[in-house]
Image 1 (cartoon, rainbow, N blue to C red):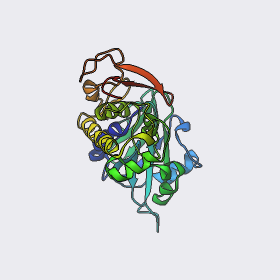
Image 2: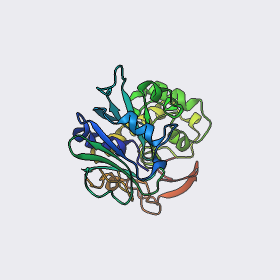
Image 3: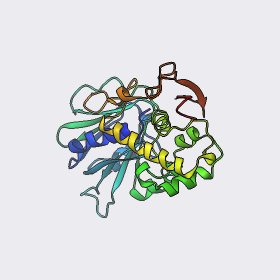
Image 4: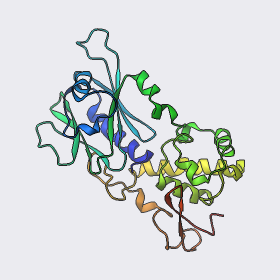
Length: 281
């Protein structure tokens, strides 16, 4: 599943090709991709004619921000929000090119190209909001701070209030946004914390070390273009590179890169967690 680094990489790659363009049409090969109360016709009516002002990200959501439609008096801005889920991918193609087999939604642009959203597993969704509607969306409103927006003091306080295991807390998007299985495992290893440690038992100094590890790991992953395990590709079709830097994720049975101890995998919060029993007490 694309996590913060992958979605950030996608947003940065799409922004130059989308910003300043206008939406001229919408093709929806799979109407189930459209989430929320809008019908396909209403979705298209409220989208077509809007200029794209920027592309950014919040947690694991890709946000295409749109200006008012010039021909609609008093029109307001809008946001096209994509949740990539397991296998969502984007690329920009010629609008008259054949519709890709796995395409679920195509946004035609006034430069003759189209933003294509493909999704092998068909779990991804697209929603269209006003900016106020986006902020009021239950899922969006529940998101915790981004890793760089959380202070050590706030992170320590958040952990101290929870008796669940730290791996589960890192995966909880209401606590800190954007972290999934890959970056939780890598950050816990970098901080020397066992994934089954109760969050409330982590001292302030170790919590500060963990937050710094999260920030550093995610920054490195973004610089590497994210991690490709199976399906993830950048909009240019390029694999991410951070999987080549994994210390522990998916490496159970291999030696720890720091001490040589065989890495171990356990289930935490329903997810496989790989760690070093020597380095992560």
